[in-house]
Image 1 (spheres, helix red, strand yellow):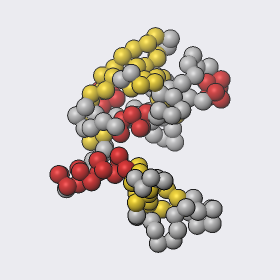
Image 2 (cartoon, rainbow, N blue to C red):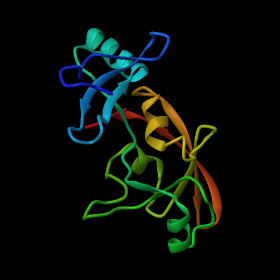
Image 3 (cartoon, rainbow, N blue to C red):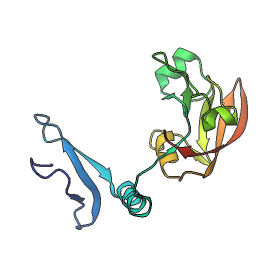
Image 4 (cartoon, rainbow, N blue to C red):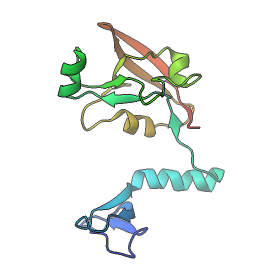
Amino acid sequence: AINPGNSGGPLLDLEGNVIGINTAMVSGAQSIGFAVPINIAARDFKQARETGRIVYPYVGIRYVVITDKLREEKKLDTDFGVLVIGGEGNPAIVPGSPAALAGIKEGDIITHVNNAALQKDTSLGDEIQKRNIGDTVGLTVKRNGTTLMFNVTLVERP
C-alpha cells in the first residue's frame, strides 16, 4: 500500500530492490497505488540527463485488443493481436504517421511486433515503448486472410 505522503518514493520488492517509483494512490479504494516501472523510469531519467527532455516512440495508430467478444462480433480469424480501428471521430491511422507511411490500414490485425506475439501479457504499446526513436520494427499483419509484413520506423510522439 502507498500511504499518504509516500507517493513519489521508490517501490521496493521484498528483497529491497527498487522495482518502481510510486506515483499516485486512490483515496478510499483500499490503498490502490500506481507506480512507474523502474525500467521505464531509468530510461526517462537517462533521456532527461542527456537531452533535457523525455520522448517516446510513436507508430500512429488507434486500435483495440482482440478479445473473444470482439472476435465473435467482428468475425475475426485470429484470437490474439490488435485490430486497427478508429473511433470517436478519430481515424485509425494518423495521417503522415509511421504507420501511414508503412501502409498499415484500418481493419488490419497486428499480431506480432518483430517476433513477439501480441497476447494478453504482451501489448503493442509495451512492445513499442521498449524501442527508441529511429528504431525500425517489423509488424506482422493479417489483412483479408493474408499475412503481410511491414517495417515501421518509430518517430517521436507528437
